Image (cartoon, rainbow, N blue to C red; front, side, top):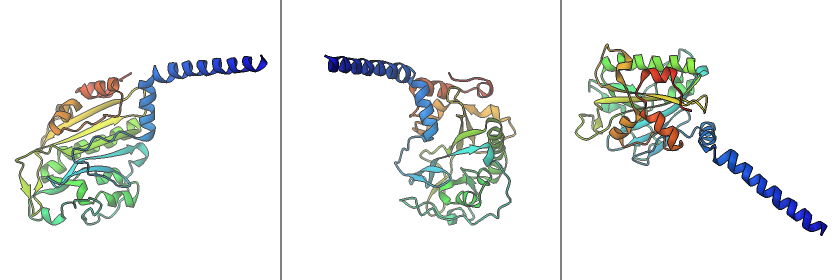
Length: 268
């Protein structure tokens, strides 16, 4: 009889534990899931090619058809925004790309700069990180005026936001489509537009994001003029940028196209 009481007590405790777990984990799965993703840094977009390359200081999805990354993604923290004066290395073929990356020779006499997708200035916290940005898988053809003009302004603004928001996740690439101009023997495509997505994920209950779509030409317009929604970028690229987040959070993040919301809104 005594053993039965012990068994019933254990069964009751098991049920109580089960209800507690359900109530605290499944009912609140939106916040819990986003917290788990943040800890695991699982914000990588989908790849349309399946050719994902994980470098030490950034990750990319390579598109062999266009001989460049369709996206490059990395984290940028306040502590990483430093200004060490490292010597610029030579650009090198990325040997870790299974289908082989474009060559620096493709850009010779092309009239285009090797435009960093993960900026070298974002990786100045160590020489290894800085040097890694000079792999050819991390560049896309950009005119000098664009590269040193509005695109440079956006990169500087992202570093300012990293210092302000303390921790950002950044995704960058060109809009790759058929009938683009190409350069070099490898037929490297020249994107007509470039995009950048910035996610502030320091507080899992207040995730917020902003996206930019900028025509490949210099402009003196304010950056907020080029704010777009992540939904729009997904339609242009066929990439799902935050598929691992719960749908309710992902939908709110991706429909935002307001510069104001980036500064003041949150997504509880």
